[in-house]
Every structure is written in structure tokens, then in C-alpha cells.
Image (tube, rainbow, N blue to C red; front, side, top):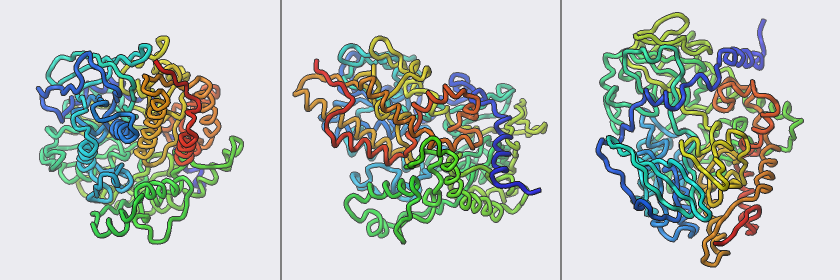
Length: 624
């Protein structure tokens, strides 16, 4: 007897929910790091560059050198909060700018949001991306463009991490660990008027807590710490010639694997793709940027970049029809009207209307998901393999993927799909991986298993640093107790002059860089306006507890608009399935710390209106 689509989705969800061990299925940071190569992009003996001497002072210290960090710096400069780059110090454990784009250098790496919107400040720098979906190499190069354009080239202290930052009456005492490769760590102290946590949500690779992982005799690497010494090639020229005689296994089929699998398949003697849950893979239609099109159809007027950002977000939040002939609106996220099920979008439905909300999402999603499943059957020649590659869950449940070579790769004779039917790996042996009782001998294992969950720690926890505010309050401890609330996701009571670029308490969209830039603008405005009022005196800025509580109320009031995640197979958003086991009281508290369910555009509008009001409402500003 045939079952409905909803029944099929629930069947697949239950199968994986029952097999899931939640967040416990992964090794912790320390155990994962034992299997990872130390920063492969820094040579042993490379010294730490110190823009500020030990014991010195810097007005603004930013922890994190990815897009969150560099955009925070740029906006502080643009607003006048920093008079020049010497007022800024950017600290990061990597060897240079880039954040996740520094660490990720696996073959095939690209952005999945079109680079014409993903790359920030294109209008200001005059930069034209070479392809519609830029490579990781180009994106990392663009960080250099930004740093040079805004005078930040010498303001990064790399191979360094925040150890402890402590509020001391009118400034932050920042204890920073320098860990130059090949040298013993040492700690220096810098005093800062303002600090910004820009450490990002995806900071450390995670490996599965698989029985026998330590017994494997072959070689292993993680996509987030690619080791070209094992595979051959380089990030600039990823010819993986050392794999030509090797049996290679890649574990995971998410957004990263979609890009890495086609490259591995070109070189590996045999490639085994271990899949627990398939990705929904649509066409990317990547192509070179044509300069004539860039000038006439894209970067053709003042304000084009902000308009393009807004149009993408409008479509993904509200399913708006775009103008006919709109350049670039034929694929990617423009084909994904139900993606707001992941991040939220404007709605007049209250918490009693969850069922109606889900029905609306499902109606938006069904035709598109059906199309993607049908494409899979048409592209992959072996129908048994094709059926196993079909995604049976709502499209908003996982990061949608877009690629032109992934599915055709399974037509190669050296590529084998090992589907675990939602259960994951049985374990590992000295020779390889066991699935469904069968051993698969391997020479090299690539872990494409993602990063620690971005929603389970504060930015302090993600950066592995202690942030100690007034009266000895520890930021990550407060976060674990669900007592860390914020004003707009940017400041918290008890932590004066400290700004964040957090997911929690913020409106989020498909383009995270858009949010990071908006938070950078907002934080810079606060500092600039407070300083203007202080008439040259030193300022202390802190949100009131009442303001943070009211913003928590606002977040909670829209929490039901992200309830679509409850219908999903285990993943990031459902805490790997653990959310199903959390009691209602705790879920209610968590609802005050989640994403803003009305979506990014309404969130950005609230921030813009707050700034236009000019009253610094909810902030307590004093001078010292």
C-alpha cells in the first residue's frame, strides 16, 4: 500500500532518530584534535607578529579574523569609532585572515551563495569575482584585498588565541596565548577599551565517536584540515596524485562532501562514499563572470550590492517573485522558496498557528524537492544507487546543496556509494570501516563530518577562552545555564564594552556574511554615538538587564516560526536529534536564546530603526 509523502518523511526521520546518539556521537574537541594535523598552512618557526607589545594598550581588540572579525574592524573604521587601523588589533589562532576560509582548503571548495552577494563590500573595493560561485582560494585572496583596502594588513596577531579576558572597572584585560608553530606557548597581556567576539560558529572540526577509530592503520584527514602531504597536490593546484593507487573512503555527504567527492573521484583508485543521510543536490550552473555582464547587468549603478543582497533575502524569506530577466535568478537559492523553514521569515501566525505554518512551508517545498529527487534518478544511471541518493525530508532540514558534478560522479566505475540506511558506521578496524557487518578495506579515510554544533556554546566557548565580566560572571557558564541574554544579539548585561556577532538572538538568512556586516555596523554605531555624547571622556557601555529580557521576549515570541526543524532528520538545527529529548520547560528557555524567527530582514529593520531613533535605548552609558 502506497504511503503519503508526509508518511515517508516521518518514516525516514524516525529511522535516523532511533539510530542517533545525539551530540554524544562525536568526539569532544580534545579527542578530535588528536587525529588532526596542526595548522598545515604555517611553516614551523614562523614567528608571531605583535602589533601591540606585551603590556600595551589597544582601543579595540577583536577575537576572530574571519568575515565577522574583519567586517567588525572595517565598520569601526568607517563609523569613526576607530580613528585609524592602529586603534584595532585582530587576534586569531590561524596563520592569517580568513576564518573558516583559512582552514578549509579541500579540493573543490566554493561558496554556495553566489559570490556577487556572498563577498562583502564589493562595491567599496571595486572587486569583480571571477566566477559566479567563487573558489575557496579566491575567497581567501579577497580577505587580502579587504585588509589592504582598509589598512588592516599589519593589524592581525596570528597564531594567537584569547586565553582569558577580564573586565576591570573601565577596560578589558586580555590575556593572549601565542602558539607559534614549533615553539612553546607564551602568554602576553593587552588592555583594551572595547572587545569584540567574532570567533564564528564553526571553529573546530568534529570526528565521530566511532568504535575502533584509534586502531586504523591507514591515513586519515578531515576536510577542515586537509593534508596535501597525504593526497598530493596543493590548495592552488589540487592534483591528488598520491591517491592514484589508494582505496579512499569519505565519510559524510553534506555540503562539504558534495564538493570534495568529485575531486577525489578523479584521482583515487577506488572511492567509497559512506552515507547516512543523502543531501538534496540541485544544479549550481557555475560559470565565469563576463566583464560586460558585470558592468551592464550587475554592478551597473550605485547601491547595486545592497539591492542584490536584499533581493536574495526577500525571495528566501517571502518567496517574492523577482523581476523578469533578473540576472542570476535562475538557480541556487533562488530555486528554494522553503528555505525560510531553516531560518525563519515574516509571519502573522502566533504560536497556535504552528500547524498552519508547517503546512505553508510544505506546500512551498513539495514541488521543488520532488524535482530534485527526479533529477537524481535521471542523472545517476544505476537506479539502486540513484534511489539511495534521493533525499526524503523537507528541503529546509539541511543546508541545501548545489553542484554540477556530484551526482554524475556516481556514474564513474571507481566510485561506490555505501549507504548505511540512516544508521551510520558500525565501527572501524585496523584495515578500514565496517558498515552493515561488512568491512571495507581502505588506505585513506577522509572525514567530512563537519564542525562542532554552532548553537551549543557561546562565542567565548567556541573560541575556547574565558570571558569574565562584572562580579566574576563567566560568559560560557551563563550560556550553559541559559541565563545569558542579549540586546539584539550584540551585547549582554554584565559584560560592558564587549560586543558579539552571535547567531543567538539575531535574525539569520542564507547569507551569513550579510548578517555579520549588519552587526558590525550596529556595534560601530553604538561606540561612535556613545563617544560623541561623552565629549572626549572614556565611556562604559552596557545593556540593562531589562532591555536584554525584553529582547529575549521578542526572540521567544517568534520561536514557533522555526518549528519546522522538529519535522527534520537529525542535524545541526535539531542538535543532532537531541532536541526531541528536551523537556518543554527547557525548550521554552532555549526559545529565548535561538534565532529570531521573523527572519533576517525584519531583524535588520529593527536595528536600523533603533539606530535612527538615536536614543541608545536599553543601553546604560557612563563616563570615567
